[in-house]
Image 1 (tube, rainbow, N blue to C red):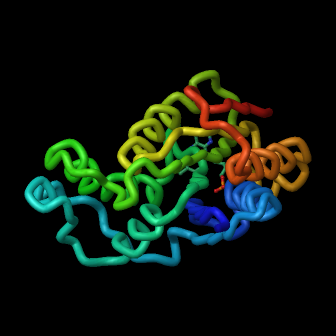
Image 2: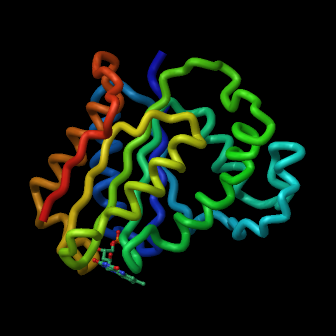
Length: 207
Ligand SMILES: Cc1cc2nc3c(=O)[nH]c(=O)nc-3n(C[C@H](O)[C@H](O)[C@H](O)COP(=O)(O)O)c2cc1C
């Protein structure tokens, strides 16, 4: 059966740089035989976590909105490709709202100590694509840490980072052939049946 790969685009702008890379990565995954699904967070209504801690008792979020649609898709997928621009050295607000709402998955796993995924032991993996406008040595530090905990809560192996800096204008990434090629290659690798899971994420950082 084909692997299910979900691509989540957090950029608020249509045809943003991270979004274009995500679509190359999904094309790569599709070329490896995966069944792909692409979605943009701006098309969904997701409210921020209110820290009511109801999920500590049930493992479920009481806020009824589109979070539940995205969460179900993330839990069903074999692979996740998460794309976000750098805003103030971290993920953009749309991405952070989704990540914070996954606190109920954290509670499910670490407070209630229940297995998250019905088919325990599934090989699930995730990668992140991030684009920033400047070149700072520390620009991706926050992303690494946030993704480590986000992917852990989703019970996904942290498979790869694609970080690109000094790209700011909308669509500018199209003039960066090596970034587009890396996105395709990493997406293909993520979905390839014969690629082994790694202890540490593959790290590609481009200027
Ligand atoms: C609110 C805001 C904050 C930003 N903060 C940073 C930053 O801290 N570091 C940086 O290098 N670029 C920053 N940028 C620039 C974006 O990361 C850059 O334009 C990127 O290409 C946007 O990706 P996108 O087209 O996928 O949305 C910021 C842009 C905005 C709008």
